[in-house]
Amino acid sequence: MRIEGTEHGMSKEQGSSQAARTAVAAFHPRPMKLSILTAALQELTPRARRDADPDLAIEEWLEFAVQIGAPHIELSAALHPTESDVPAAALLDPVANTLDLRAPFSEARAARVRRAMQSTGVGLSDLAYFDNMLAAEESARRRKHALMLRVFDAAVLLGTDAVTGFVGRNPQLGMDANLTMFEEVFIPLLKEAKARGLTFRVEQCPMPGWNASDSWHNNIAYAPGPWIALHRICERHGVGDQFRIHYDPSHAILMGQDSRSLFQYLKDAGYDFLIGGFHVKGQVIDARGISAWGYGGQTMQRGDRDGDRPRADPSAQQHAWKKQTVFAEHELPGTARHDPLAYLQNRSVDWLDHQLAARELLRLEPADTFLVVEHEYPQARIQDKARLAPILAGSLAFTRAIDQAAAAMYALQHEVLRAQGIPVQGFGREAYRS
Image 1 (cartoon, rainbow, N blue to C red):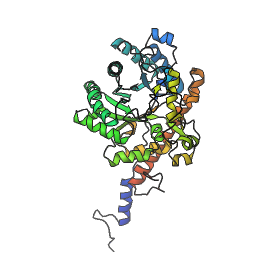
Image 2 (cartoon, helix red, strand yellow):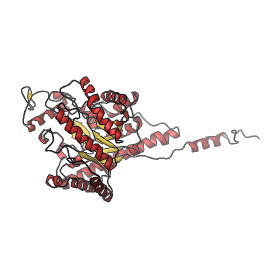
Image 3 (cartoon, helix red, strand yellow):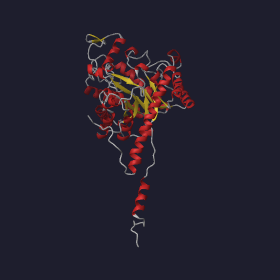
Image 4 (cartoon, one colour):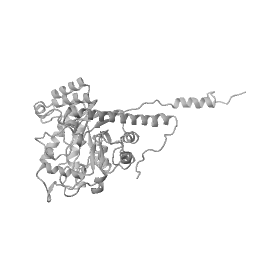
């Protein structure tokens, strides 16, 4: 009796079995790379010691990174306190000039830092300088741009290909006029980045309390709509590849957005390539504060103005941040309670879905993408190395574990199960759901 078979002489059952075997995909999760912004402990090295020896702060931060389990650092630069136009007392989140660029970074300085990186085994994710590149006052803007160019040069000498920062805003101009100003004064910075083989990654914080005006959006690159508008300007000038986003989910929460919908929007618009790195920082929204003021924050009687003029006292100007702080508080990953209801209301970051959605919706290679922990939780901003070390170690461990879980979920669902035609169970969080 003849047995019915395939064209290769196998039975149907054998053919099905063979097809199943060839469709099997290996389980191969790809976690992202972990880093930490050195502003997490801006006074690790006392200023009296580091002002006299500018690169000592980097060496001591690399040693601290080993202690807390950070395999990379995002090295923070800033105008020295004696040169800054914004007094420290007026800042919500103090900056750090761990990378001291009062003098240009030299090959000798770079060699010293590279030796410290080699001896500690800690790498460099990128350099960071967060300042207003569209400052209204020309002399202040020139000073900021000059420092940014020094950051670019330092990035080249240290072998990293990315610098992270803000675009900023001229508060004296409307938004459309700021787009014109971006084209006039920021595009030249991107051309300098291109000449050095660098990418500039923009963090999207709206910076509502950056000045004592009633303006809420003081960094024009605050959401996907503006990112796309800015990128189109960049493309016209041949620097589209230099403009990328360093996405921070805390700012999306601050503006009532959720990451999955935001990523989906970028994909729908054809700009899913724009996000090139991540700050890992959350936002915990206070429902009582939202009830009192809404998402615009405190609009009157803040204490930052005398009549229609900003108060001269820098510590009084800090009250401008009540536009944000009356309804929100920064989260250091792992320090906020697990709150599924808050996730559903977009009032806290759902870290697992954040990492899963990034893999599902963005055009990126996880193994080449950095997750940079940014510590701005006010009550834990302790300038005491011994006390802060276990806090940062715990947050880094949480970030690593949650990303590994997301990597495992993605590999299992989108590679292993998909290869065998097995459906994923349930629905999960859906974009644009309201």
